[in-house]
Image (cartoon, rainbow, N blue to C red):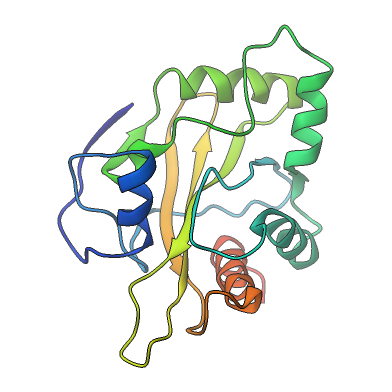
Length: 203
């Protein structure tokens, strides 16, 4: 993948933790509220929605919540959710691609402008199977730095990639409301923030 090291901002977030156990890099972890690129209007677009690739310290499985939030917020986007992606791959065992375990760690340590192999090849092949040019990848989810009152927030890093060209259209980190991370409602609030950010044009 091509990119440059991120400028150091706030360290000690969920993403620093995720980097430590799964994808060590040379730059500072991105922080909540950090965005690169611009989210296009996705109405009428076939969008592959991947499951969360890296997780640390959160309760429950966020993937069904992400599916629910996106599906209920917009029926005009032609979502292809992870269960459908996995079913498509199961019917095409000769295709060298994956839905889970993608090599996405570089997003947490560098500003990526364009993805390279092996991720590019995996996304491009799956895009050809689904007739989709756009991938939404929740890169990581985890716990942010604790507040002074002992509560924490859940943060989600996500990216939108043009799988035909490898261009990274957008990357960002959102956070939910503060609370106990053992409360799945805190996770759900981060998912809602992600859905609102992605579908900014829907009110």
